[in-house]
Image (cartoon, rainbow, N blue to C red):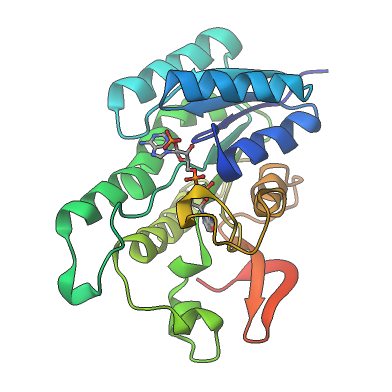
Length: 253
Ligand SMILES: NC(=O)c1ccc[n+]([C@@H]2O[C@H](COP(=O)([O-])OP(=O)(O)OC[C@H]3O[C@@H](n4cnc5c(N)ncnc54)[C@H](OP(=O)(O)O)[C@@H]3O)[C@@H](O)[C@H]2O)c1
């Protein structure tokens, strides 16, 4: 039986590391991508200590050369890719102010990783994914990229202060997900966006109310969808006005 091969970007910590751990526990060969060699090797060691067949791959999603090298390495070593989890993501270095005070430099930095990085990695990996019998692409997005949720007065998200860089980057990622799914709808490739929910990681200075174990569940679910599973949806943790619903489902775009 062939093993399933998964590439997870930003896999050295947070939701990405946990996604690699959970996929590894299911017998998937995990290519744990990280932009920093030392952090990536540490993740590889931790994943192997947990019994996973894990391999560090250097990959900075904003560096075209590194994306190319990662794709070439996977081609040489495995000749195909079954699962791509576009997990790497950032928030602005300084808390972004309101839209009227948007720092375009900070916005570009966020878009380089959360938006352009996903496109660069996806397009570099697509030839490898096309060689898989059941390819799955998961774009780790967020409910804060859901324009419907963010503008619904009944949603807890409507109470968030207005910001631009991060939420709009995830809205762009949602549309990117929908458009890849449309292009690839006559192929076995499924492309979906994951909503981890508000998860305790460095991204939010560990203020999230969900554990990384819970936060990775949406990515793992979408990465392992059966042949009759959906493509072109935003799926994951649901949060209602009454608080965390502790349920999963499809979110509105
Ligand atoms: N935490 C939440 O509540 C939450 C909610 C919804 C969505 N998300 C999304 O979940 C994903 C993972 O976030 P997290 O919460 O686990 O954050 P995290 O702990 O800060 O991890 C982010 C990961 O992305 C990597 N990364 C950043 N820039 C990169 C680049 N240019 N190339 C490659 N890797 C890069 C980081 O590597 P370094 O260690 O080298 O910086 C790190 O491994 C992100 O897409 C985030 O937007 C998170």
